[in-house]
Amino acid sequence: MVVVIIGIGFSVAVPSFQGMQQRNRLVTQTNDFVAAVGLARSEANRRGGQVTLQAAVGTSGNEFGGGYCIVDGPSPGDCTGTVIRRFNALVGDSTLKGLDNDAGGGDWDAPRTFLTFDSLGGLDQDVTGGQMRYFDLCHPDQLDRRIQIRLIGRVKVWKEAESGTAAEDIPAIQPDC
Image 1: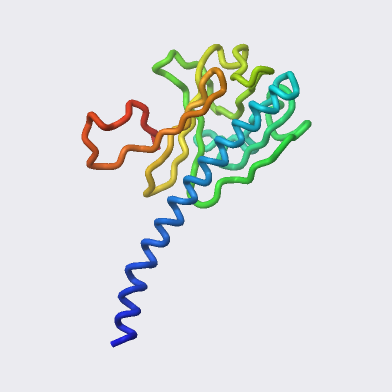
Image 2 (image 1 turned 30 degrees about the horizontal axis):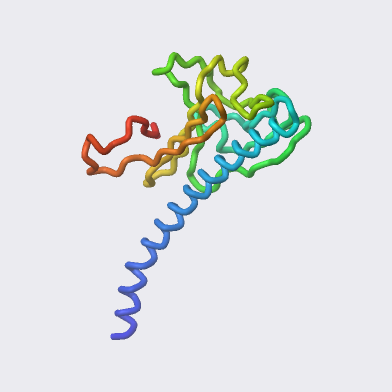
């Protein structure tokens, strides 16, 4: 009887624990990317010049999922040159892709592999053409995240609306995973 009760307990606990691990992984990956943006902004300000958050691999549709780095100066095209800090590839089935802001007249051509910050810590206007940048962090069977980098360099994160949510409660900006 005790073995049956323990077996039932494990059959309930293990799937719940695995879901919690995936949710925590997605939150950690979001926080790591937001921290990388913050570090790139502060380094640009501290150095008084351009600093770039650069994708290490740059696969279209998962540009930053293979890892990324912060480099001194404008985009060199990869993580070479003076690397300030490297970030590992995403673990599991997660993807991190850049999006074009079509609604705002976007012109960010794929693959979207870098963000350049100016000496004030904002997105470099010469590079962005005055456009905000968006990223979607996606993980199967999880509530995905949309990450917005505003022109002044500030970051905002949206969590995907849960299914069954009333239409008026769904935010206008949703991840496209």
